[in-house]
Image (cartoon, rainbow, N blue to C red; front, side, top):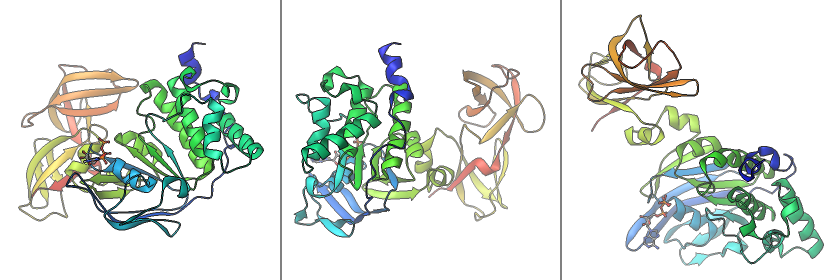
Length: 369
Ligand SMILES: Nc1ncnc2c1ncn2[C@@H]1O[C@H](COP(=O)(O)OP(=O)(O)OP(=O)(O)O)[C@@H](O)[C@H]1O
């Protein structure tokens, strides 16, 4: 087995259900303001995490995700509002309880391991408040859980990227913090590793029951990991909900664009329907005369068939993913080809005419200003 394969296999992790359990904390950001370099970076930022909940902060670069995490960590002072952990105010204007007195664990994208300390000592570092033998028991249990029990005398540079991530995870959960703060924890891993590491990390978070706040710019990652996903925009939460809520009912076109590419059609509502080059679309709740943008996701928004009902189009591009066709379809009246992703169908090929039907329940309609 090559080093990469070895690292890739989930069996390399320790047995599930063996991580130490935390006493999960409640975390409240209450109307937090932060200004940096004369700019408002967090603007009345308000969010409550329930004990044991995993919340992902998702947003464009510069939306304030890392700043919110740094505030929770006690690294970034705040200018208004408060942060409370289990009801105790840990941040307020003029007050910042330091990180080591907040009962939190931290895991950053570069893992921040101590290069001059062995694997075991890296984990023991966070357990200094325990007696030597208790600390050793807890550190070794954490290393066993992430599958690094036999590497305790190695140094971080002797580990692969995936193993370093596991060490960083073991170090952050070993003290059994009430809150774990993770900033882009998988972004430095190669795409092949990322999914396994992400799933195993999620299993560890669930077992420890630690309340977790995870910063990511990857919508898929947020949807897989988060009990709730908070979409940040200009330092405020634009939308928060379960992954399925915010995927199915994004609050506006920008939120929808964040989760997948879209085909967008501008139209005006007349008599309860918007007329589009793909046929009429019922819009019963929207007033007559309203200008709308109709957004069609490649997955589920429209279907293609070689015959039957629908509007005629022509396939101008097709890519095969495993078991899935990703087609581009030109339809008269559309500015750009429509993207459609559907189960593979060998009958559909480039150059062929097809019938396109909209799946109303998966089409999003947003009024325009
Ligand atoms: N020390 C600082 N001084 C001035 N501006 C800062 C400072 N730190 C961050 N900012 C600005 O604050 C804004 C929010 O930064 P933050 O790192 O929280 O965003 P982010 O959503 O995490 O972005 P990214 O995904 O790129 O990490 C950015 O515009 C950034 O340039």
